[in-house]
Length: 125
Image 1 (cartoon, rainbow, N blue to C red):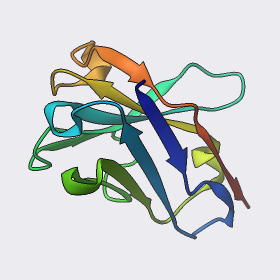
Image 2 (cartoon, rainbow, N blue to C red):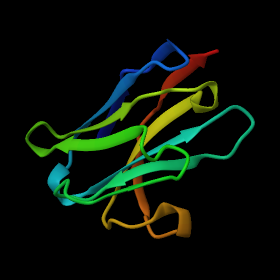
Image 3 (cartoon, rainbow, N blue to C red):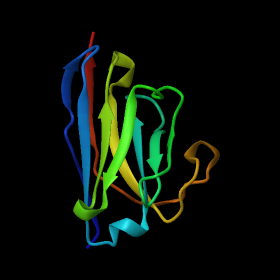
Image 4 (cartoon, rainbow, N blue to C red):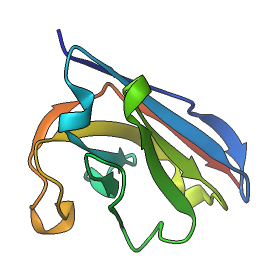
């Protein structure tokens, strides 16, 4: 059974940092591109960052570029999202997702196979 389990969310003050993890099981992790998405209350889910199968290529939403870093450890079947300089606008439930192809979710070029259950990130002002 395929599982994606996010962790690392929590409450942090503005300007602080968090590191999210998404541990995958039940799949050949290195054959999937991975993505991070988020959904704030009352808003649609939006893409945050994606990373290709090898970890060599990444793509970020403009809103997080320069503040967030996506990485992966294929040996541990885990993808990470390092979030720095957090602001209240980053408050959301963060989800990881798998895709067979690496591309740009903002133009529909990242078909999702599976979602994780999400982890809450709350940034206080």
